[in-house]
Length: 151
Image (tube, rainbow, N blue to C red):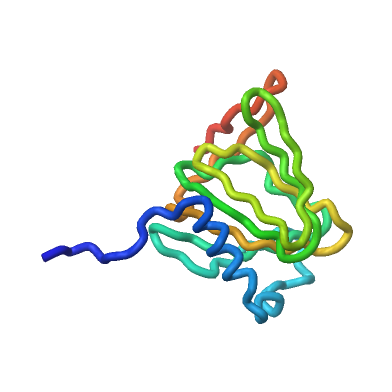
């Protein structure tokens, strides 16, 4: 007899995109956003050890700062607005501007920052596997990202 539950315990990047798209298609999603918030907001839509799904709202100019997601892979779908993503990979930065309907996925160790580039609220849905248990912030030293020691 097994004591573990059956089911998916690790989601591929493609599966994470499909999950994010599924949650982003919810017609009631917009009603869950506080459009008066002055800071970026995160609302947990689903949370298990193997999958976490977040709704994020981004006031104009809101940014994550440079960070990674620990061992988690992830994907996100832009629901409305324009988000800019900068990625540090192979010693250089790559930039992407993402509009409503655009999606991205990434593996563990993905180091990036995201910013609302528009004048209005941006909204996105993010899916992570396993669920987020750590996020390391980074600062720039000698033109490269260095993890910030967190007490």
